[in-house]
Length: 320
Ligand code: ADP
Ligand code: MG
Image (cartoon, rainbow, N blue to C red):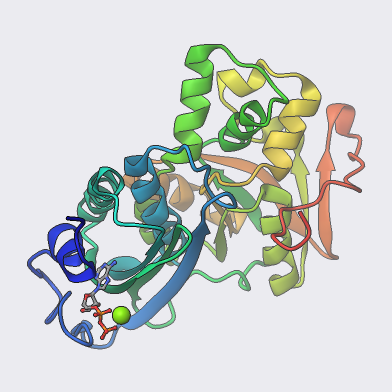
C-alpha cells in the first residue's frame, strides 16, 4: 500500500534536530535565534512546467529547490539556519520522493541548514521553501545601498542555464558533453552563501541573479536611485559560452535567468577587500562595470558603442 501523509513525512523529511529547539512533528517548529541577531526570511515557489521540466532528475530538483532559496540568503549576507518545505504532489511516489529528499537534504547538510517543518498535500507538483537565516543588525546586504561611482561585480559565470534552456527548446544545438555541462548549471546551481557572508561590510548592495542580469541589475538601480554602465566584453563567460554566436552570447549573458550568481557593488577603494572576500569564499568574481548618476543600464559593445537593449526583457512570470 502507498505511504500515507504522515508516514512519508516521517520517512523522508523528519530527522533529529540539531540546532532547532523543536523540528518536524509538532504544530510549530521552535528556533532559538542567537541573541541580538536579525532573522532573514525568504521564500520561493517552484511549479512544474514553469520553473522545472517534468523530466528533471528528482535529486537535482531537490537540490535546486533549496539552492534558489539559499541564494536569496546569500544575496543578503545571511547565514542559513532553518527551512520549511511545502510540498504538493499528485500522488505518493517513492521513486520520486527518495531521490528528491536526498538531493534536498544533501545540500542542506552542506550549508548546515535544518529542515524544521512544512506541509504536504496532494495536488500539482509544486515545491515551496521558506528559508531563515541570521545576520547582525545593520549588516544585511540590500538592493538599496549602491552609490554613484561604485564598481559592479559578478560572481562566477553567466548564461549556462539559458544555454541549456535553448537546447531544450530546440533553438540551439550543443555537443553531448557541452550540453551536460550547461544542463548541470541549470539543474544544480551552487548558491554563493560563503561569498555573501564574506561581502558583509564590503559590498554596498547585492542581489542574486535569478531572472537575468539586465532585470536584476535594474532592481538594484531603481532601489538605489543610480544608473549603470557595463562592458559586454567584460561579462564573465566560460569557454563554452565564448564559442557561441555573438547573438546567443548576448542573449544568455544579459537576459538568461537561473544563474544564481551574486551581483554586488562596492566602491573602487574596496577592490582589494572584494578580492580578499572572493578568495576567502573560494569564489571567482569579475569587475564588469560601474554606477553613474541617472537611471537604467547602458551596455557597451564592440568599440564602446552602446547596445540597443530595447526588446531585451527580463523574465517576468506574468508577461513571458
Ligand atoms: P498541521 O496539521 O498542524 O499543519 P501537519 O499534519 O501538516 O501539521 O504536519 C505534521 C508535521 O509535519 C508538522 O510538524 C509539519 O511541520 C511537518 N511537515 C509536514 N510536511 C512536511 C514536509 N514536507 N517537510 C517537512 N516537514 C513537514
Ligand atoms: Mg499541514
